[in-house]
Image 1 (cartoon, rainbow, N blue to C red):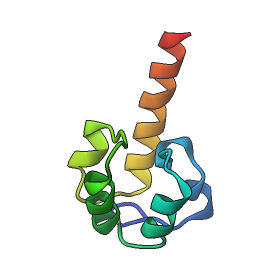
Image 2 (cartoon, rainbow, N blue to C red):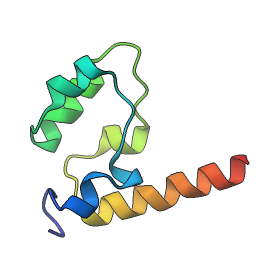
Image 3 (cartoon, rainbow, N blue to C red):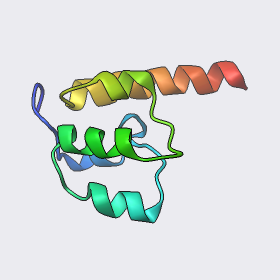
Image 4 (tube, helix red, strand yellow):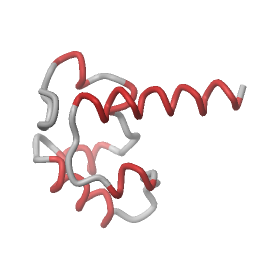
Length: 79
């Protein structure tokens, strides 16, 4: 799925593909395309969305893996 939005099972639960949202927001996101999800996230009050994610216009397996590595590095350096 490289270069395209991903729905691979291995990508869906990957740390680089996750963001913490409440049940209401999660319901709004559903199975929409990435650009639609980002629009919803950017409009949601009291929700932190990292700048890297906000600026994306597409999302694929490489983006997920790269974000996962960066999040792991942040977590490791904070411990």
